[in-house]
Structures are given as C-alpha cells and as structure tokens.
Amino acid sequence: MVFRCAMFFVILTVGMHAHARADDSDVRIAREIYDFSANFSLGNIGIGGVFPVGDNSLETSATLLSFGTEHNRTGLGVWFSPLSVLSWSHWDNHDDGHLSFINLHVYWNVLSRELFFGPFVSANYFFVDHDMFHWDRYMLTVGLQGGIRLETERWNLPFFSVETGFRLIDGNGNFFVGTKIDLLPLLLWRLGLWFAMADDVYFFW
Image (tube, rainbow, N blue to C red):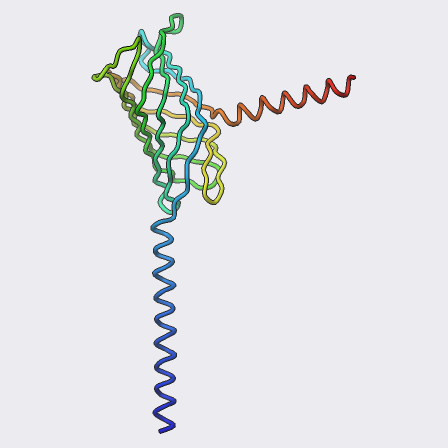
C-alpha cells in the first residue's frame, strides 16, 4: 500500500512538472509570436533626386505624424501617415507641391537596436493639388533603406534615414536616392539652442 502511494505521488509530481514546462513553452512561443513594438514619428522632412536627370530631378517631401508597428523577432514592420507633401521639380524650377493622404511603408529590418537596414516598399496615393483629386496619380518605391533610430522595449523613434531604389511615378520609372530627418531631433535641437541662448542672456544680465 505504501509502495503504491509512493508511486502515485511520483507519477503525479512528474506529470505536474511536465505540464508546467509545456505551459511555459506555450507562453514563450506566444510571446515570440505577439511580440510587437510601436513605431511613432512626429513627421519628417526629406530631399532626394531621381536618375537619369530629367525635367523633375529634385524631390522634396514633408510628412506629418507617422505611426505603425514592428514585429521584434522577424523585423517586419509597417508605417502609415495620413498626410505627406511631395514636390517634384528641376534644379532651378519649383512646383507648388502635391498632398498625398494615403502613405504606406512596409519594411524588413535585418539589424537590431539603434541601427536599421533592409528592403522596403512604399506607396503613396490619393493625391490632391489645386483643389483637385487625381485618382490616377500614384507613387511606388522599392529599394533599400538604412538609418538611425531610438529604440526602447516597446517604441521605435526614427532620427535619420537614407533610401535608394526604383521609383515609379504615374507609370514613369526612375532610380531614386534620398535622405530624411525626423522632426523630433530638429525640435530638440531648436529647444536646446533656445535654452542655451536664454542662459547666455541671463548670465549677461
């Protein structure tokens, strides 16, 4: 009788331990699958050029309020912005700019932490200029990107990036290279200058 009770206790203990290990494994797998971090940006400003050089060689852009998410284990991520201002012109001519209200950016980051690098695909649609909606106007870009960002456990805040690849604008294709800087470091830099000037004035008086 004692032997049977002891064997029952051993089997019960082993079974509970195995079940606990299975639960821990399920929790770990679930955390890896649903391990996402948030992408956020106040916006950015950028400048770039297309090649071969033509009538619209220079591109300037400004984006307001971008947000998205990134899967931490695979590095796959997405950005969306509700407003982007794009302008294409020659080096000595400038157009009035075009508003784009659907701006999607999908990427794969093969690095980690503060440096990011990898392929991306971006699409811009719903263009409006001079109070007119251009349903047939679009911009599609496929290429590589790299840059610097501030990365925390749950947030990704971009600072600076460089992009290059092939860009299709209204069916016309060109090679493209450009750079973007986020509004947050510019704002912090401007605030730093303002506080430095304020300290100098206070010290002078």
